[in-house]
Image 1 (tube, rainbow, N blue to C red):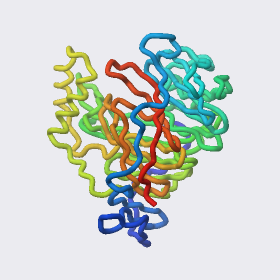
Image 2 (image 1 turned 180 degrees about the horizontal axis):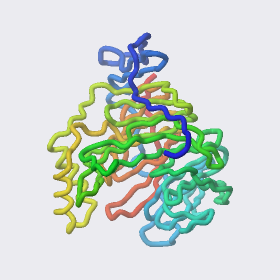
Image 3 (image 1 turned 90 degrees about the horizontal axis):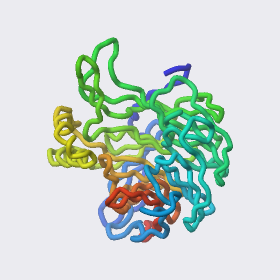
Image 4 (image 1 turned 90 degrees about the vertical axis):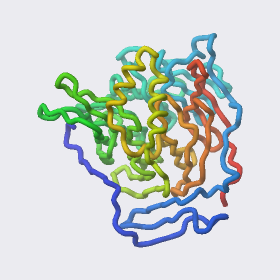
Length: 411
């Protein structure tokens, strides 16, 4: 990596516990559902079972309260490769459509207002939209992976400014923005050959969580963590990198001015300050992550389902030649809702969307599991609603708003 960034390698290993405390109250089962202890100034939250009773919890409304999208009709309501969906504080919606390179704005009832953006390299144009977010202030940001550039818009779609990431960066994804306006990104360092020697088999690339100022100057590194897991083989004397079955990656989400990061090795997620200090570890105990042959067969079928039939034999042979990790990822994406609850999606292989996720309160206590509709990808969660993208059986995309019903909350 270029520059003189201050790098901290964080391994998540903590010294022996000093203080042990009970979080929450015991339910019908013996013992507390979660134990909180302090270890060398780091809070460790170990969840044994959910706080919600087994017959209650949070649910989504069966039908969406709002749906935007058509299979045949005005182009502004047709979507292809949606890369982000936001609900603004006033109820309006912003949708980043990757297929048209547009950022589209709708009112609270789903009526189209305006659109901005097109394919290109000029300010307000995009090569590959790969992120959408709100704030700080009354602003919307868009991340363009193709140019490594952030674009800041007003909530009416007017261009405010752009910010190009400096330095010789490789694969970079947007995480979000802190309250001071700095941008947070995840950068993957590449695997491959070193000194002409091919490194084969399963390995994990490091992933750096870094911050940049509003003018693109690199500020600091929150930390360097285990990133994407890859399989490296040799073909004609050169390294060939592929995504193995049950590949792990770094799961990242902002919570105010702090960052949740997890490596998916076990059910453990760390909460870090902007300066890289580990403040809390959230764990769920007793989860079996061993990969069985049935798991492998299902993962192969899911990988083939997204490919044309004429490629199945070649792809299956390629997958059969790969090593498979002994354990599956403990979870998938991380999201933080407007109430500072942490949502941890179950792990699934692309293109299958997770059907459920665990919800933790702002202190790391496991509340329970929330199920979502089939083929629904969650993008944003409010106090009593969830916004996401739903695909029908033909792959047509719709933005849907569902009510979040919070029955049976623990006292």
